[in-house]
Image (cartoon, rainbow, N blue to C red; front, side):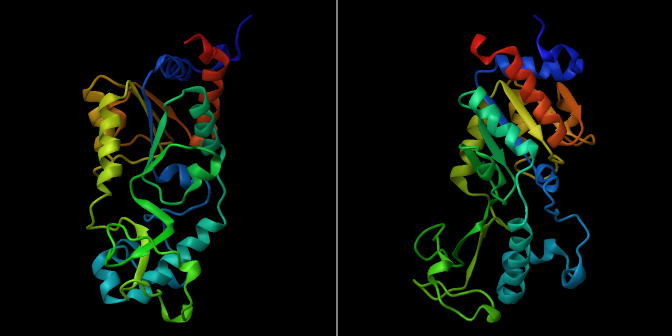
Length: 265
């Protein structure tokens, strides 16, 4: 009896076959998959109070030193947007793919936590997590986590102070001009070097060092599957470019993997 994948586009069926045969699959996601959940990217036009500010100028250590309250308020605004967002079918499809392909790891540039919310268990957050906070001076090590729920401070005045040293608390995210967390980046490099298939979802491929990961995987012989509505900087090295939003394409891709029978790998 024919499986349901027979009616799917040839590229999608071929990509599903590559995933099914993979022994060391890796996923890399970017802002596109979060945008489909209603989370604006830094490139999107801002609204209201924040329309007068350049987000890239706010997300820097220098901006925080210059005006901690302004930067803290900007991230409180973004946290509010993210709090209203829910994982979309693309996030859930990747969580399902993890159950079909044991050992699959998601490397994400996103800070919103939606992969975890969808059920993905092994997620490398290259750029941090907006839900976490840390001491701005990393006084007890890098990072020094601070649970602001345990602190009492005047929220109208800006960020709270670190209970250990008194420095301002900041979001535990990677800002422009900062290095990525060494342990997360090292593991991402290592996985990319070992990958036999890399699924790249919703990334422009221009933000480094994350943008180098598909190049590393390709150089080591991995097949590259890209899911993106538009061509990106990654497209020239892809084996299959599946054009369309991740919320539409990924469920089809995962259904094709499932229909082909991972147990027969």
